[in-house]
Length: 317
Image (cartoon, rainbow, N blue to C red; front, side, top):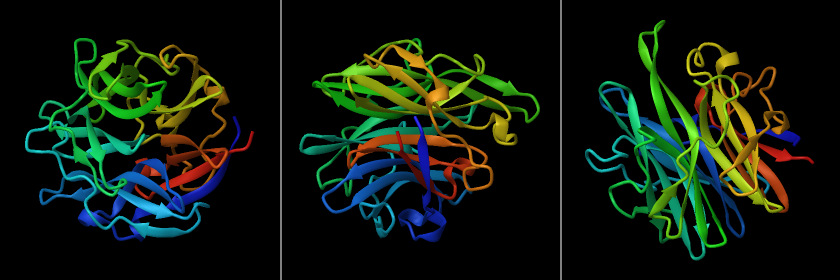
């Protein structure tokens, strides 16, 4: 692949967002309408204790992605209930048009004591064309299990021949960062299928092989189905030192599959990397690949994990 970068197209610090959010526009997710496009993203509010809370917002743009027409000025989906898997926020909300309804797969997170966080995946449905979403229930549809003990999150769903496919991440271990005396997470990409988007059968294996080492962290799988093949773009990084050293920070990877379960990784074909000096010169992360207007596009975040927005690239070949 060969991607042409079209630049950063949205900076949350330059716009007024609902829920007192000012920074971060992470994991952008595309949805097409007749005369505009909508991009959902996860943004952050600072609570009275100085802690982050993650909310979902969106921006509507013209079909050239050059003019912003509207920012969401309302709560798209409320916070999770007390003690629930998404009590402290949603990152990300993956959007899937499913016949005459729109599904929102919730990447919910909540704070822990011994480690920073845990995550699970829930389901929501929109009955007003994506303006708001309502949870199917307060509990998750996919969560920790025998071989995936924690950190089940980062959902991405497709429906192929009446079967729902869900790619996601799951934690395999926490390791000790001796230099900072903190716990760091290690997570891999998994896969599950369903006939109703609620009851899922896990593949129960790591589907993308490691490239860096066994502590490689893999995140945000994004998949398109084209020419009878599944094509995945995801991000990966080192488990330690990724905040301070850009060579350890997130980069984008690529994998190919004929069934959505068994993948061949070939990062050399991803066709995009960090810039020399720009908003995405330190890292590339949280990709979203989609087909639109007979072309393939890639939304992604750059430096500081999307604190100052997201950019767009178009596939040239």
